[in-house]
Every structure is written in structure tokens, then in C-alpha cells.
Length: 455
Image 1 (cartoon, rainbow, N blue to C red):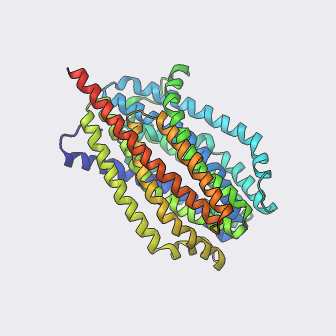
Image 2: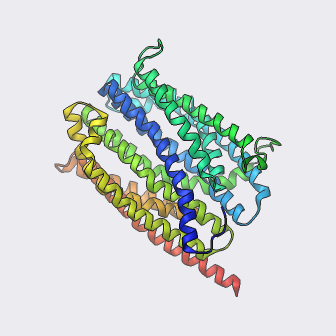
Image 3: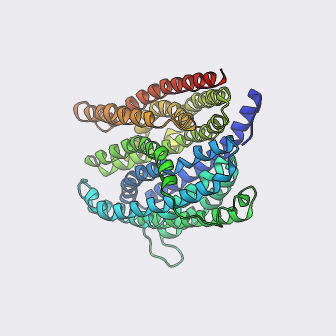
């Protein structure tokens, strides 16, 4: 990261930071995409099982990842304030925290997995696949959380191409491992959707090993001596990260869990409906990586400028990101409309599943417009370390407004399963509006504070 003077310089720096993040996010999501698509080729039950497993895992993963993401604005502020001496300690403490969170998730999974699956009206084979997909995937949780912490450190330094490189190497490895374990190659038995969990867990381990090697050998990371002179766990540093990370994590959890809740509610419908819903959701989640990447880039750039007390520059980066979000929303809508039939056919050959998937994608064209606008705003707010109100907005928009609306429409109108998607659209739209209002208020507050300090 470095200071920019002109709008052109800011746009160039933003693009320089954004595109590697985008490639990284898309590649990470492609792991789940290939899990789902390749499992679907093994059979509709494998696709449904991985769908259920993913719907349980995704909100947990994104929520915890939100806590880990807090290290990004912390480091960005330290860089902006030119306080580099504290960075190494902060990252080491974040690694300790990521390990602790991984252990907690594993223990909770051991206790809660069976009860959660048992309350769902699933076919026995679908339940079996979902359970063991999650169990095998869980073996890679701690390496995954460590990697995400290291990635946040790399990105906060502006070195987003490094994490991009790691994921680009890991992605084809994940595909090959999926092929081996799902379809039973190299003398191994065909494991279907369960094999996808094994392959992805192994990929998490590989990405973490790559990250540690790079931190030891490459500039500018080795100058921080991150892997030497380890300090003891320090509770106060954990609290600092958790104060920022828990609201981020819960806000993301409330957003992603509404999709998980909808998928769980879909269990009342046929296996083909579940499979079609998950296929549409899986692809639109891939497109969502674009505005999400804009948000991450805004957290880095806005956080850097706020740390340096250049509030006008932080505001300009916010406008750049929001403009990009609007363009991306329109672009995503066109992509979904033009290729909805092709996308549906990627997941399954069953004509009924394909037809249902096309219908779900039609609703996704609308909901991603609001989602693509809201994600950059959340990223900008994280750059200001303003996270508590975002949590409240997420809770109200998604769980007080969105999900109840969807349930009513699904159960009391002819929309049936598509009613849940209309509820998602309503919740995301309210969220985007409230987030925009919050961003404007925060920008004004910081500008007033800066003017008062100058006087």
C-alpha cells in the first residue's frame, strides 16, 4: 500500500489490489463449485447431500472467516499510521486465535451435527452423504483458518497477488483430488460426495503449506519474521480482534445463514428441487465473489487512508468501489440471463432438475443486484472499523424481514419454493439501503472529527 494523489492513481491502485483478490475469491469458491458439480455427476443424491452439507458449512465458515478478516483493517490502520513494529505480534496472535476457533468448531460439530441432520426431512442416503462430507471436510478446518489469517496479512500489505498465486496452484490440485476420490481412481473406491470432502480438506492443508513457504522466502513478508521469535498468546490482542471480528463474523453469518436456512427449508420439497436450488445458488455464489472482492479491496484501501487520517481519500475510494459495485451488478445480471440454460445443464442431466434450476436462476438475476451493491458498502464500513451497526442491519434485513417474507410466500402463495427466493430479494434490498445510509453517516462523522482536530 502507498499514498496516492490523483483519482487516476487511486483507480489504478484499487484495480491492482482488486483483481488478484477477485481471482483468489473466485478460485476459492470454485472449490465448492467443483465439489457440487462433480458430485452431481456422481448422482442426484450425491448432489443433494453435498448441497445440504455445504448449506450447513458455509455460514459457519463465512462467520468464522469474518472474525479472522478483522486482522485486515487492523494491519491496514497500522500501515497507514506507519506503525509497522506491531504487525508481527498482531498476526501471530491472530494465528493463535484461528487455531482456537478451529478447535471450537470441531467440538461443536461433534456435538451438533447429528441433531441438525436428524431434524431435517432427508432421504437416508442424502443424510449419510451430507454427514460424512462435513466430517471429512472438517479435518481441514484448522489449516483453512490459519491460511485465511495469513492471507489477510498478505492482502493488508497490498500483496494480493501472492494469495492469488497460492489459490491458483491449489485449485487444479483440488479438481484432481475430487476426480480421484469422487469417482474412485488410482485403485480407490468411488466415494461420491463424501470424496469431495476428503479432496477439499487435503487442498486446505496444501494451501497452508504453500503460504508458510512463501512467508519464509519472499519479500516483503520475510522482513516481518512472522515465523520466528514467537510471542506467547496474549488475551488483550485476541479481544481487540474479536471486538472487530465478532460483529463482522455475525453480520456475514446472518447473511449467509439465510441462504442455508432456505436450503434447509427446501428439504420439505423433492430431492430434485433441493438439487436445482443448490445448483442455482452455487453458481450465483460464484458471481457474488466479484462484489465481495470489491468489498475486501475497499477494506484495505479505506482502512489504509483512515489510519493515515486522510478522510477525503478514504471517501474517494468508497465512491470508486460503489461505482464498481453498480457496474458489476448489471454485468452479473446479463451473464445470468444469457447463460442460464447452459449453467443449469452443468450441474445435472436430469431434465426436471435443469428446468427447475433455470427458474431459480431467474430469481437470482434480481437478488444479486442488491447483493452486489451491499457487499462493497460493507467492505468500506469495515475499513472505518464500523462493524456493530452492520451486524444489526444484517440481523434485521435478513432474519426479521427477509426470511419471514420468504416463508409466508412459500407456504401461502403459489410461489412455493420460489417464495423463499423472493424473501431473499426483499431482505437483501433492505440491507443495501440501510448500509448506504450508514456509510454516508460514518463518512460525515469522520470528516467532522478531522475538521475539529484541524481547528
